[in-house]
Amino acid sequence: MEGGFKCCEPVLEKTRFWFGAISLGCNKNLIDTQYLLGKVFSFSRFQNLYDIRYFTDPFVDEVEYVFLNTCGFLSTSREEALANLENLLKKGKKVFLLGCWLKYFLALQKENIPEILSHPNVAFLDWSEIEYVSVLSLINSFKDFKSSVFKGEYKFPADTPRAYTNLLYGFEYVKISEGCNNSCSFCIIPKIRWKQRSRPVEDIIKEIKDLVAAGAYEIILISQDTTRYGIDIYKQPYLFELLSNLEQLEGDFVYRVLYLYPDVLSLRHLEKLKDFKKFIPYFDIPLQHISSSVLKGMRRFYDIDFIYKFLDFIDKNWEQKFVRTNFIVGFPGETEKDFEQLVEFVKKWYFDNIAVFQYHDEPLSPSFKLSDKVPDSVAAQRVQILSEIVNKMIEQKNAKYQNMQIIGSVMDIKWETIVVRPRLHAPEIDPYHHIKFDNVRGILGDSNGEIKIWSRILYTL
Picture 1 (cartoon, helix red, strand yellow):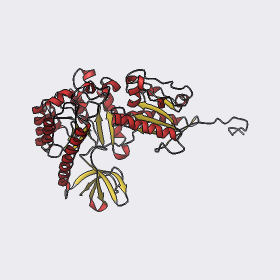
Picture 2 (picture 1 turned 90 degrees about the vertical axis):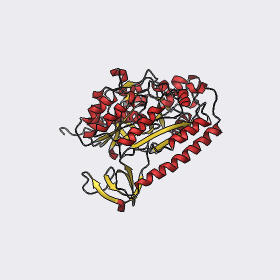
Picture 3 (picture 1 turned 30 degrees about the horizontal axis):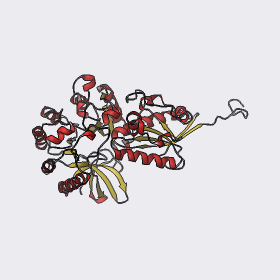
Picture 4 (picture 1 turned 120 degrees about the vertical axis):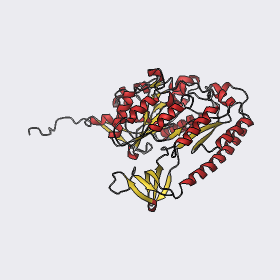
């Protein structure tokens, strides 16, 4: 019969690629995973050749392949990567390993490579090759073991689509640069991620336009050092020129900026921010310490007087704002006087959220060679003291929300409880509110009066 099925024609069996993914570490890592997912999803258009299925739980029996994107910043991060890899291999998964943990060993610790990396169900994936990946190359990487090696620095995939995994919640991250030019003595990121490489303003603006068109309301700009964005391609810090371009874009959206280092910022920059209408007054300022001697050992050269002026300016010029920082306690050479200075600084009520970390010696970091190490027991005690102070202060600050009407975004709905992210709070970093439906005072935007994920609502605690 014309055009009908002929019994003698062979039926080609589709190549099956059923997979999952785990992204560890920071949201910069998440963006890399999104590029990888987008690349694999793009092959779904060849439905006659491939059976591609993605599973949100990589441990289910149906999954054969798993992408494990790792973090290698701290020993605890590397332990987390190892634990995930071991669990996946126990479940019989074929694991594509990529990211900072792998780079840590292949590039920096060649003599200490864990034996598990030679497992026959582990293949390496290099970020410099993402845009050249194909389904067959992924499957064949286990036949041609360790075919992929690290060939150079990370680069932004040129023609690779991103799978935006946070659009359901109305926000998405945009990486504006990769790598870092700083030489902080406690950090190994420049050795893993290399020097700063910024994206051109035009590329960033195009991506944000596409995101807004796809339904993103909140754009979150990230990089290792956001304040130094553009210095490699424009020969000067170019963050505020980028933000000025953002302000001119049409559409109902807002943006926040993460990782604002204060040594490049000035009060003149803050004056500009006052005039930006789409800017969320969220100030993420990783100070690490306040003692001049400790900061010198960290190779963080802040002017302490300027820090106070900087924070005072924010406090006086934004009635509604959110200020976040983090501190490292127990750095080599930190005296009791240094710690007391940090405690007094924290008590000044500048901050809405503070992360407190205990210093850990990283063998590849410059600080590893410093003398006058603070005993772990002393550092742990200081962390506990400072954390208790921080928790009490944050609890008192949060009390101001009581009986106030707050604007927030719905992140989850659990029976009679709605999980809401207040407008000023950053996703996955700052606390969410858990409220009852009776506390909703209004639904903002075009939602047809229905509360659903990413509805913007007006509520009380």
